[in-house]
Amino acid sequence: MFFRKPKKVKKENETITNAVFGELEYIDCAWEGYSVSSLFGEEKTIDLYVYADEDNKIIGKHQEKVYQDYLKNRIEIEDAVRKVIFREFKLPYDFELTSRFRVSSIIVTCDGNCGLAIVDTTYEMGHNRFKFVVETEPDYEFTDSEEYYIETK
Image (cartoon, one colour):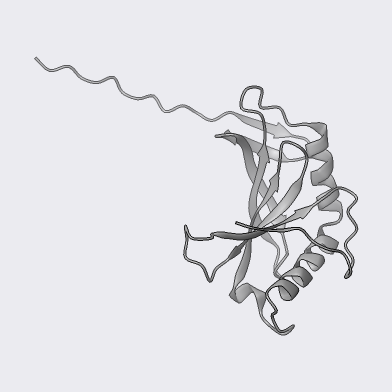
């Protein structure tokens, strides 16, 4: 006698529309959606990850504020990030950044930090996929003399 296994029911992910972040879907421990970046020239759609507590899945006001600050200062931040990349990788200023780098996502952490994840395409997938993350903070002033936090993964 054979018994059939019950069919697995695919669970739908929870979705919300947030006034600041737009339409988001909860996957694992983050609300996922889309944002835009013109970091390496042309404006492109990139992933947006807003991390939240697994139990209550609430997006905090501090997370909304830091993302709004990022959006308000995006052009300035992106210009500063390009300068950091040139400096940290000791690239000539006529180097075409899109030949090596691409911004993959914006990350907003539970504690209200906002960062850009940038992929160095000289590494194979799965090996140092995110070469570094440049954090942006609310009311953070970007100047040439400012130190930038770059985390090597």
